[in-house]
Length: 315
Image (cartoon, rainbow, N blue to C red; front, side, top):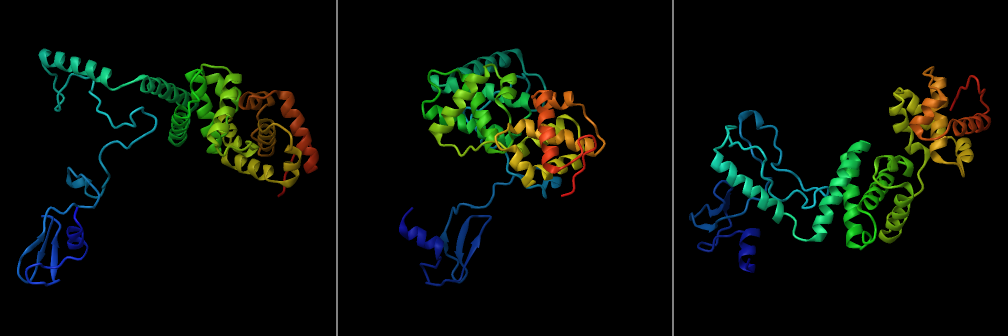
């Protein structure tokens, strides 16, 4: 675009009569002079949102059409996908000849959608990432973060010599830590197709090489998930978070595993609210032993000077 054309759009004036009394017609994409009628500029690009409305009822629901770009697909969701159903736009079945044509088109589509070994690796890895995140019940934000971390690991050459499953599980673990949705390596290892040691080793390498701002997990990050698994009321979760923020409990937590501390506090709060859960139930939800829960429970009761048989807490 020339400088003269930019000036006409930014500060329109009539080149015929010199008037600045102009009017823009958004429907026709033109700028006209009101005094002499000269069309100063035409084919102006509409900078507004590309809303599509197909019926009167959709007039107030102005949303962009089409799927947004996502890191969880190897092409970010920008390629064309041919539907597997042999039906036309009205839902009627197509002829056998056209079905054969579309079958050949699908085959060619599958062959051309992946250009090289890097994209083939990405297709397999992101499919494993969606499977793992689905079994763990992770939200879309963590899935996107995990896919983004895996792509950065591929660009940094961190996948070479390691299993795809291990790098995917490590990327998911890093995304969970970044979003304060803590999962232990043992928990991820139960859903993954690789072992805990490989996930931990790959996770530490990714964090170090990509310089991710990952910090040690805190007991508070485990409480919502433990309470959801044990089907406890929101009041119990709120009480547990208040207890964990107490400075006396923070001193006791130093050097202890966060899962054991969180499990003990959830067990304690369930006792306070008369929603008793056995130590075995809490231990299974938290992935720790009953002995760990008893030891942490006794230490917290001693720090808060509470009766172990009938604990109560006043902030």
